[in-house]
Length: 431
Image (cartoon, rainbow, N blue to C red):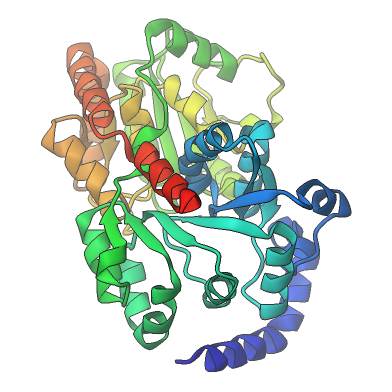
C-alpha cells in the first residue's frame, strides 16, 4: 500500500463515517474533548507560548504511556532548559493525567488525527526539533511529514504486542516505506526489536533500550504509607484490603467470589475494585449489588468520609491507582483472567505488594516472567485458583511479606531505560 492509497482510503473512511462521528461527538465526552486540536486547531495562547521556541515533542497515547513518559519528560526539561517540551496524548484520560502530572515541565496537547491537513497544522504549531513517540504509534502521514522536514523521529520504549504484530504484518508493504523514515528505534525487549526489524525497520537503527515503566519511581510502601493511603480512601487503617486493579468485564464476578471467601475467613476485609474503564462503574456497581453487596463510588464520596464496613469501594476516578495500590494487602491485576493480555503489574510490584494475576499476560510478558522467575508474584489459572490464592495470602502475613520483598527487588534491578532513552535523544539533538 502506497501513501497515496493510504490517504485515499483514510479520507474515504472519514467521509463515510462523518455522520457517525457527529453523533458520537454530541453524545460522548471522550470523542468531543479536544476535537478541535485533533483537527489541528490549537488555542491562540498555546501558539503564542510555543512561537520561536525549540520544541521537543513527546507523544504518549493514553494513561499507561503517559505515566511511563513522565520521568523522561521531566528529565528532558531539566537537561534542556533552553527548549520547550510538548507532551501529546490521544485519549481523554491520558490528557487529564498529563495535565495533572506534567506540571510546568511540558505543554500538553492532543495528538492530531492522521489526516494530512491536521498533521501539517500540528507540526507547524510545534515546529519540533525532535520527536519521541512512546511505545509504537505508527501514523504514516505524521511520520512522513516529520521526515520530510528533516526532523529526527525516535520510537522510545517501543513495544509490539502479539496482536499488534499480527495486524502490522498485513500492512508490511506500507511499513517498509514508512519505517525507514524513523531515525531510531529503542525497543523494550529483544523480541520487540526482532518484530520491528521483521516489519521493515533498518536493522542498524534498532536497539534494545529496556522498559521505562520499570522506572516508575515507586518505592516499597511501609506501614505508615499504607495506613495513610487507607485513610485517604476512607478505609479502616487496620483492615486487610484486597485491591483489584484495571479489571475488565467478566472478572468482577470472580473477584466477588474471592471477596466473599476472604470475608468468611477475615470478616473485616475491605475490597476496592478499579475498573480499567471508569465509565463501567454503574455496570460494576449493579453486578456487585446483585450479589447482596453494598457499593460506594469513589467519585461520589466526599473527602475524608469513611466507607461503611463491608461496603465495596468502586474507584471510578482517574490518576489514583498508585495510591490505591499503596493501601492494598493483596493486589489482583486485571485483564488477565479474561483473554486480554493483562495490565501493568509493575506499579504494585515496585511497591512491594503481593501481586496475583491470571493466565493472560502477553501484553506484559517481560514483567510477568521477571516476577515469576524471582518468585515475586503468583499466577493463577482460573477462578478457583484466584479464590484460593487470595484467601491463602490474607491468612499468611509471612508469605505476603516475602512475595512483596522479592517483587520490589526484581523491579529495582530492572531500571535504567529512561536514562538510556534520555541519552539517545540528547545525542540526536547534539548531532
